[in-house]
Every structure is written in structure tokens, then in C-alpha cells.
Amino acid sequence: MKTRSDSGPVLDKGDVLLEARGLSKGFPGVWEHLILDQLDFDVRSGEVHTLLGENGAGKTVIANILSGYYEKTEGEIRVKGKLVHFRSPREGLAHGIAMVHQELMLVPAFTVAENIMVGLDAPLFSYGIAGVEKRIQRLVERYGLQVDPKARVEDLSAGQQQRVEILKVLFHEPEVLLLDEPTSLLTPSEADQLFVVLRAMADDGKGIVFISHKMREVFAVSDRVTVLKLGKTQGTCQIAETNEDELTRRTFGETVPDYMERPEVAHEELALNTIEMVPSGLEKKPNSQGISLKIRCGEIMGLAGVSGNGQTELIEAVTGLVPPASGEVWILNADMTGRTPKEFIERGVAHIPERRREIGIVEQMHVAENVVLKDYRKTPFSKNTVLRHQQISSHAEKIVEKFNALVPDLWQTECRILSGGNIQRLILGRETWRKPPVIIASHPTEGLDAKAIRHTWELFLALRAEGSAVLLVSEDLDEIMSLSDRIAVMFEGKIMGIVDGKGADREILGHWMAGGTASAA
Image (cartoon, rainbow, N blue to C red; front, side, top):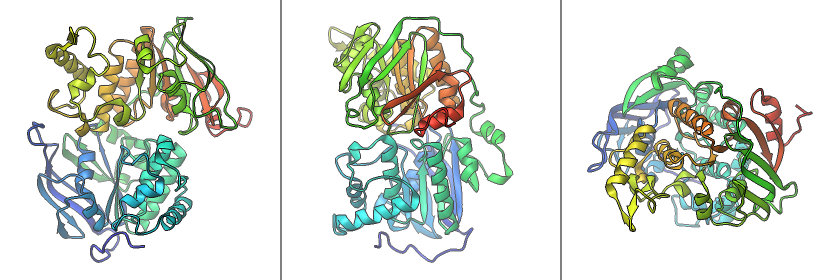
């Protein structure tokens, strides 16, 4: 089944497959500076070339240009030495260039197979759904990316949807694969499995461009690494000729602390209390049990677990998005079971969602509008139902400055063109500036660089000191163990155990995440 055209002769290992020279990109009328400024970059046959850089450095922009999603402002792109000008991702695919995006780009109502068929270079459904499903199943078995080809995307967890994105690209058998932080929703073992796939593809002569801010991943899979800063390269080197400390200093300047010291929890009052609560969607799971979680004011409760084990349903229940199937949800001694999301917000529940573009912001709205999305009806942002633009602007400027978000213009820049990391900074600012009594934070540092991660951790500890309760949902055990006063692990809809955060045993937590018991560890 042929899915792309021949883009030239097969090159030897080490020859340049894809290169950019003098590449520049700007957004006229919005950006006051170039996002990419005279950038040179290439990827060679048989290598993994990693792009490192802070949020807004231009990593995603260059990947979007090289794969045809954006058009360049200046410069040239060559594929196997041939000058090309991509006007669409389809043209990129025709030359063997494909991209896995950090943000999901799927049609929720379609099945996995239907989503993949949409991108095929042929009349819709001309391959036959059964044939596509069969080929997807072979890819699933080959790469271990367990996804049902017949499942609807809207019914999949975020981690499973990320696997669909990877399968969607692998289906085209590209010669150059660009991956924009593809492990953000994968467990460490799944990420390691992906690295094996990438190395095998490189060994077959393919070129891999890998975007990541996680040093462990960079050294696990890279041959070369290029550091980007504000749209310019800061140098390229062989991974064997550098080390983690050097790359961290060049990229971020500082490192993330291993453990965040904090005083003991000073409060006994319960901020969040679920009583034998079964979230909607989990009531039919055979191992699902009523969830009883008690989080005190001024306490951080970490909830660890592999994506797809009920965390999303739990979050929906404790934020009012979906009423629980049974049981009770109490916020600050008030029974909130079955109440609306607006009532949860008014009660003081802040929500930092996992799917930031889908439910965290309105992409078509401007930055200032998104910053006051939950507060525009309140003083000082409106008076007698009339918005007060000066007050909104002043507040948005403070949020942007405090969280170091790269935003060209508060009232002209639509959030859709911001990087995922900068969107996350705006959401963090919007949800925490009022010092809410309850914060539900799902993967709050996903896509952030080391400096921003440290800033977020320090923010949560500062809010904790002010009496805020935080439910921290993450698959990153380092984050969970660094921040949490207590740690719970969720597997197949039930809580496997709860331990004190200080001195928690990583091996036991890992066994619980896999469905085992503490005694097995």
C-alpha cells in the first residue's frame, strides 16, 4: 500500500536527508520579532537529531515549517539535495517528511482507523476500512502501541490518543520523522519502547528530528543535539561530546531541584473529600471501587498512575464536569455532588486541565480574554456588565510577566498560535492568582522547560503555605515525589494505596502503577 511518492535516490547513512538554510519565520502584524532568525538545521540518514530549547524558542515552529504546516518567511529547504517549497503537510508527506505533534490533531468522533484514513494520499475510503484496520493492527503489534483500530478517539485517554498520533504518522512509512515532545503522555516504559522504535528506524536509514526538554530522553536516543534560543541556534554537537550539566546550563541556565522542602501540613480542615465516589464511566469496570480521598487545607496530594486508569474520570467528578455515578463529593464541608462546573468554581475549585487547548483555553480568543475567562464578570474586570479593558490589560500583563510567558500582544495575539508551554503558563496564572482553596492540577508542568517547572513547583508550595489544597495528577514520579505530602496510586479505577510523600518508595509506587501490590515490590 503506497502512501507517498518517491522523493529521490536512497542515500547512504550519514548523508543529508533534510536541510534548512537561512530559515526565518515571522507572523506579520502580530510578532515584533522573527520566531526563527536565519536558522540552519539538517537531519541525516541514520541519525536522531534532537532540538532543545526553552518554551517559545522556535522548536515547534521549525518542525511545522519542515513538515509543511507553516510556510517559511525566508530561506530554503532541501530534501535529498533537491530544493522544495511545501505548501501543505500533504506535500511534505509526498516527500517522505512527517510530523507527530505535541498537541493532538485528531477528529474525536472518528475511529482510530478513520483518523488515519483522512490523511492518506487517495480518495477518502478508497483503501477500504478493513484493510486499513488490518494494517494498523500490524503496526500496533510491531511497535507495541496498544490501541484498538476500531475504537472512537473521543473514548480514548489522552495517552492512548497520543499513540494514535504516532500510528497515524508511522502508517506513511516516512523517511524523515519529526516528533514534537511525543512522550509527554507516555509512561517511562512506553517512552523507552518508543526510543527502541526510533533507533530501529534510524538504523534503517531514516532521519529522526526529536524535540524534548527532558535530558534523560535526549541522552537515551540522540546522535546529535542542537540548542535553540529565541529562534537562533546556539550550536550543534554530537551527543557523545557533551553531558547533561553542560546542556542544561546552555539550554535553561538552571536545574530543577530533586526535592522541595516544606513544613508539615498545619491544617486539619478538609478541603476535598470524596466518599465512596465512583466517577461516571468507571462504574462498569470490573475492578473499579468507590474512591475515598481526603485532602486537607494546605496539603498536596499526589495522584500517580498510568494514563487511562480513571484519573480523567476522577478529575471530571471533583471539578463538576461530569456528575459521579455514585458516592459523594464534598468541597470545604459543602456537599457538591451533582453540582455544575460554575458552582464548583464559585466554591473555590481551580482546574488546570490535561487537555489545555481543548478545555483550558479558547484558541480563537486573544491572550487577555483567556486570562480573565473565569473572572470577566467580577470586579475589577467589569462594571455593570461592561468590560473594563484597562483593568483586564493590567492584570494580564502581571500574569504574563510573573509566569514569563512569551506573548507578542495581549489584544492581538490569538492563543492558537502560542506554543503549548506558553499556553500552560497562562492557564497556571489564570487558575492560581486568586489563591483558590482547592486546585485540581492535571499534568501541570507538561511541555514546560526546567526553569518553568521549578517556578510551578515553587508556586504550588507557596499556595500550600497559604492554605490551598492541591490534587496533583501526574505520571511523572519525580514530580509526584518532589511535591506531594501524601501519594495515592490509581489503577483500573481504584486506589491501590496511599503513602506519605517524604521517603516514599519508588519501587512500590511503580508496582502499584502496574497493578501489583506493595508486598510484590
